[in-house]
Every structure is written in structure tokens, then in C-alpha cells.
Amino acid sequence: MDEAARDRGRRPALHVAARQTAGRGRRGRRWSSPAGNLYATLAWADPANCFPPATLAAIQLAWAEAVAAEGGPLTRCKWPNDGLVGGAKWAGAIAERSPGPEGIELRLGLGANLVVRPPGVDPTDAAALGDHWPGWPGAEVVAEILLAAAIGLVRAGPGAIERTLERWPGHDLFEPGAAIRVTTEDGDLEGRYGGLDPAGRLRLETPDGWVVLASGEARRLRRAGAGGAG
Image (cartoon, rainbow, N blue to C red; front, side, top):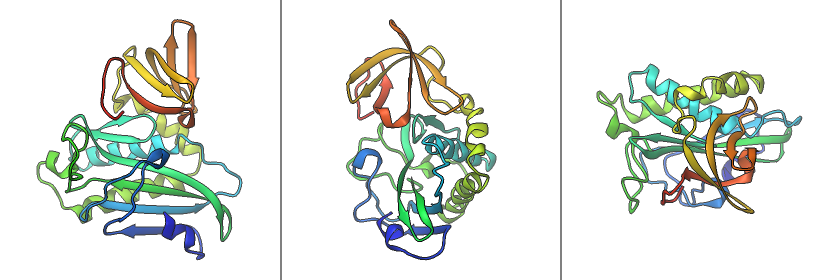
């Protein structure tokens, strides 16, 4: 993403790295980036700020559907930006906005563990997609599939985000009514999971009524009573 920010060429632009030495995830968390996986940044001119925060969730859903369409394993989506396979994270996405060569631009950082699970990470927390895909077609093929899905979604425009998220329940990690805990800047909220609203915000039924949270308002999401990194 840093390289994409320094690039003053025309937009859209796609930057792909074989490995990263300073990979980062949401809220500045470190993203381990060994060689063999997918690390890419899509830089897209968006001067009117049209693409919503739910774009990250829509990308994960587009990836889940693309993997399934190619005969891959069932993957799940965890709001707001994670993909899981076998209960462990295999993919993530982050977004940044800043001035670009054609005005304000959106940079989408796309990361996926294709064949290498991050070293030193518990297998219950991180997975490589290839380990769950019988007849694995190869990292290059899958990288192309994932990049095509993400680029196709963004090319279709902001309106495609809401239409895509209508299919979120088919790959949602949480079932409706599940007891979950959301950590926010102001503390933890617990309640029953109500899925996503049309804008891609999380709906949580608490003892005090319904709460709707945008992705930027949530730090962690997990099942109530569960530990782990979230």
C-alpha cells in the first residue's frame, strides 16, 4: 500500500508483491507476509467518496463465491473484513484514502494465505487456503481468480456493494441470533447477532434494544465467551 501511495501514475492501478516486509492489517495490526501468498493493493480514483466501508465485507463475499465457483472449499466471511476456512483466517482486506494523482483515491489492500500459513501463528487462528482445497489449481491461478473478483466488484461501482451483500447470509460465519461480543472504543457490547443492514453495518440486539455499528466503530468481533484474537 505504501508503494501504491508513492506511485503517481494513472488510476486504476494494481500493485502485487511476492512478499512483504511490513505487512499490516486493520487498525495497524501486523500481517505476516511470507512468500507464496497474495499481497496486492488496488488503487482506484474515488474523488466523490462513493465507496462505503462495507466494500471490504463485499470483497470477502466475492472471494468466497469465487472460490466456491471454482470447486474450492466452503469459506466463511467474518464482518467486517475477514475470510475464514476451516474456522481459521485465510484472507483479509483493508482500505485507505488519501490524495492521489487524480484526486482522492481509495486504496484496497488485499491479502490471502494461499499456500503458506503465517509462521508462529496457532493453526486455529490462521490457515492456508490450499490446505483445504482438494485438487488445488495452484497459487497463481487462485491469485488471478481472487484479483478478478475484487476488481470486478469495484469496477461495477458502489451500487454493486449493497447488491453483493444481499447474499452475505450464504457465507456468514455467524448464524442469526448467535450470542456475540463486539469490542468498541467505548467498551464491549454483547447481544444477539442480527446480520448486516443494507449498508453493510452490523446489527446487534442488546438488552437495551437494537444497536447498529459501522466497521470503523468495531475493534473486535467474536462469539460471546470466546477468547482469541478476534
